[in-house]
Length: 481
Image (cartoon, rainbow, N blue to C red; front, side, top):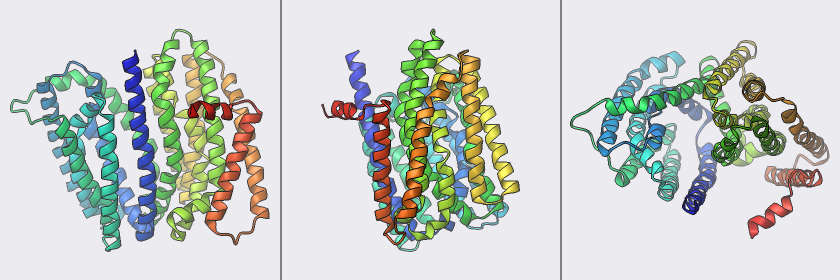
C-alpha cells in the first residue's frame, strides 16, 4: 500500500509540475507570438487544426488507453500494434495531405493547403508515437515525460518565436509542431523501443479492440461538441474572426483545465468504493460539487470583469475585438466545471452505457446551440452565447440522468450546494460594477488587472471563511506543515 501511495505522490508531483510549469511557459510564448503574428494567422491554423483533430480521432482509435489497461501484451504484440499504427498513420496522413486542396477551396483560403500538408506530417508522427507514449505512461515514467514536455515546449517555443520575428508568419505556428512530434516519438522510443513486425498479425489488435472501441466512440462524439463552433466560424464568418474566437476560447480553457485536471483523476477511485450505497455517493458528490462551484462561479465573474485587461496585458491591443467573446465564454466556466467530473461518477456507478447516452444528448444540444447562433446571430459573440447556453442545458441533463435515473436520488442536494457559490458571485458582481464606476479608466491596464484580481481573491476567501464552506487558514497551515 505504501508503494502505491508513493508512486501516486510521485506521479501527481511530476504531472502537476509538467502541467503548471508548461502552462506558465505556454502563456509566455503565447504572449510573445500574439504580438508578432496576426489574428488571421491564428485563424488559419485553428481551421486546419480542427479538421486534423477530427482525423486524429481515427489515428488514435483508443489504442493508447488499451495498451495501458492490458497487462498481457508481449513485445511481439506491441510490435504488431506499432506496425498497425504506422499503416494507420500513413493512410490518415495521406488522406489529410491529399484533401488539403479541397479543404482550402471549400474555405476560400489558399494558405490552408500548405498548412494542412505540413500538419499532416505531424499527424503521422503523432500516430506512430501511440505505442511508446502509452508504454511511458504505463510504466510510470512521469519524471521523464515531464522533463521531455517542458524541454521541448521551451525549445520549440523559442524556435517559433524566432521564426515569427523573422517573418515566417503562419509557419511559425505549424513547423515547430512537426519537429516536436518527431522528437517526442524518438524520445519515447528510446526508453521503450518498438519495431516494425516482419510478420504482421491482427490478433493483438482484436484483443484490445473491445476496450478501445468505446474510447473511440466517446472521442468521436465529443469532437463535434468541442469543434463545431470553430468549423462554423471558419466557413460562415472569416479566418480573422476565428482567430479572435480561438484566442478567447483557449484563454477561457486555462482555468477550466487546471481545476478539472486536479479533481478528475482522483474522483473515480474514491467514489467507486461507494458504488453499493448510491445515497451516500450522491451526498458526497453534492459536497464535491459545492467545492467546485465555489471556485467556478467566482472565476467566471473575475474573468468577465477583467476580460479587457487580461486580453490587452497578455496579447496586446490588436486582440481587443476578442474581449466580448471571451467575456461570454467565461460565463460558461461554472457549468463546465461542475459538469466535467460527471463522467467519473457515471463510471463509479457502473453506468458507462448511460454515460455514453448522456454524451450523445449533450452533443446534440451543443450542435443545435451552434446552428441557432450561426443562423440568427452570425457573429462570434452569438456562437459564444450558443456555447454558453447549450452548456447550461447539458449540465442540467447530465445531473438529471446521473442523480434521478442512475442513482435514483433527488436533485435538491445538488441545487442547494449551488446557493452559496451563486451568492458569492453576486457579491463579486456588485463590487466590480462599483469598481468600474469609481476607478479612473486612465489607469494602466496592468494596474487595473492586479487590483481587480486581488480584490476578487480577498472577497472570495472572506466569503468562504465567513460561511464556513472552507477553512482557508487551516488548509494553508496544513500545506505548510
